[in-house]
Length: 402
Image 1 (cartoon, helix red, strand yellow):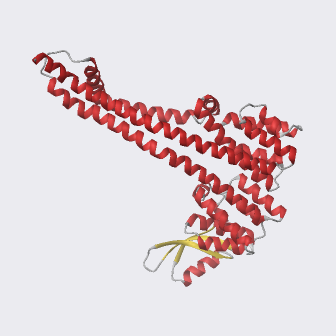
Image 2 (spheres, rainbow, N blue to C red; image 1 turned 90 degrees about the vertical axis):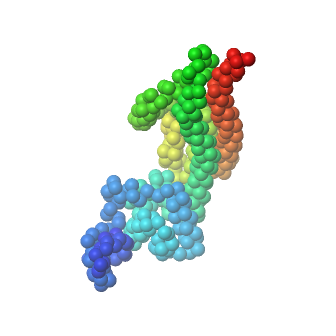
């Protein structure tokens, strides 16, 4: 039995969409006619996965992937067969794309394919890491346990992303408001305040003259500034597509005092946690290291992992291979070395990941704690300059009158 997506017209001529499980498309059309609808399009879900547009449509968000994995792991842990568990997940979800993908996976499983092979039919929803972990769980016979670990991994990664986004959300809004207020003061308030002194032949203070010149420039060339910002944004996005440029930017980012620590810690946490779950699931170490390259976004660190994989293939330990690059935190490297010596590499990798994630959280909180007061002080200083630019001519006028 396969899953089919249909489009049909009801008795009133309104279009209906949905999913139906059946053996053939002909059965789907017959079921729709029995319900009083006229089918216009019937397609098997598994067949649509070959199209690029469908891969984009079935891409799971972090929350959807986390919930899907946790529900499937819980149902398998309770003893339900795989096909029933997938059917229950499809019934439970409220997301149409998750339901469509889940039914497509279930149809592939009913045809005799493994779960990893069925998930691989939807590359837009499941990454290589996800597929390799599921395949290792099926080979080991402990798919439920592996899925629970995978659910923990997905949830922890989602939680880390949420913390970083939430921590940067308020400063971003504050920065935007500060820029808008500054532009409003320069283009509206300053010109109207200065009109009061336009008839006075006295020379204006330097601060007042500078503010007036800045205000005139913004009002006369605002379109040029917006065009420059748009051109810079487009140029930056085009340059970021070049690996050589991205490599140089990432290398510079690693050398910055605080930003470098944040980038190094975040990528190390991803690497160690991913390697931990892959190694604990029974994935061969060389294959696990190759998959870990995909989760590291910093190109110099990704290149270091590639070189480490080559050295491990030649017989060198993971810790020594990572130490030679000088890009990974010493604590993480020492924990990996301790795990290799004691035979508890999975546990040490987990500890290294937890340590790096906590360090990243502390660093982000510290950066935001420093950035917010600095931004407020900068905004206050800018407003003070505008107020002084308006008041200085008044003070000088009072002096002349006296």
